[in-house]
Length: 484
Image 1 (cartoon, rainbow, N blue to C red):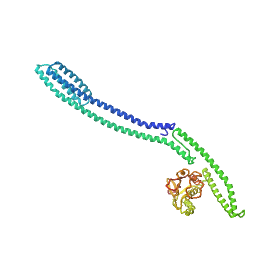
Image 2: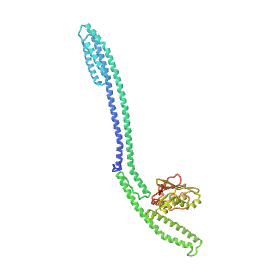
Image 3: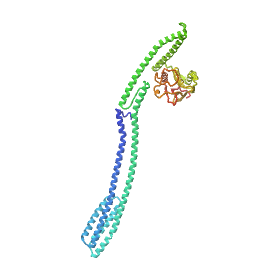
Image 4: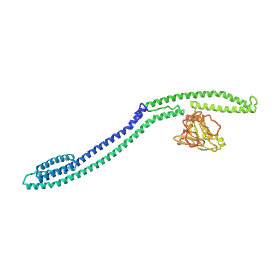
């Protein structure tokens, strides 16, 4: 989707994400309204039919009762107006039954309606038949009036059957409601799940360029000016990424100019410092005449500080050459376990003097690199571990193979490195807080030089999290043996 969709701005990406996430919810709302509207219409139709049946039964029963009363009055009084009323009620009942049958032509009420219509018609025909002598006509009419009880029974059956149909329709409506409810639940669940997927998708689209910017700024803060900063996403964020990459190139240029300037200054300082060192040596050896005890003491101090200054300048030169890639690499196959043992032997006296225990787990592994540089890295890491480990403490060196990489871990149980210093520990000249009791102050270049040397060999140097002390990891591709 990232290739197909390229928003012009971060705001347009947010708006698009909002629209796409809201669309399934809108569909769910529309589907719910449609289902509810259908249920309302079905309920209205069911109520209308049920009410119509009950009302029709009531009206037919009422008309039959009035018709029966008029028929009995006619039979007793013999007045023709009562017979006219019977005929009028008959016409009304026929119209009611006709409408009743139209509304219920598809259910089991039709046989009862037809039966009621037939019985009522025969009864009225018998009442209105004036042929024959009076006694015979009266007997016929009295026998016809007896049919009202049967008609009343049919009307009762109609009412009961209408109530039964109403109950059935209510049950059907309940089932339909339950079915629509289940359908609605599944639809809403599916649409909500789809919305969640869209949220995750757009969160990744939004988070990707932001993470790229964050990683780029973090690399700039760590002094990595070689890795290009590429941001893919909205065009305004891509423009910010392009500006950051321009800043990276500018900082890289300034960093190289700084490296060249420091290298030049350091090189220029070596010549006069060498002269001072040689002059101090002449004085110390007494070649220019005998010295007093105090003069010998002062000359010793000068000689010691000249050596320290020479080492500092050499460290600066090494660091600058490592950054400028001007030192010849001269790669060779190196037995790392043997090199670790050699470096550990160099620090054995310092560890014995403070009763520091060294535990090693070494493997016979070879790597390709510069022996001098790799030894400098191990020496710096072990020297720092010895320096910050308390008396009677311990140092561990462990070698592991993982994913075609040699991982060498050096850890101590000293005070460790604070969270504030962890991000800057590999920066040149950074010394951090002095938490140990040592009076020896480093130059702040050891870890910076070590990181550059390891990168020259195609590896990485990292500070690992630890509960106590400092824990460094050197990772390098190892040379695979023919048997592997």
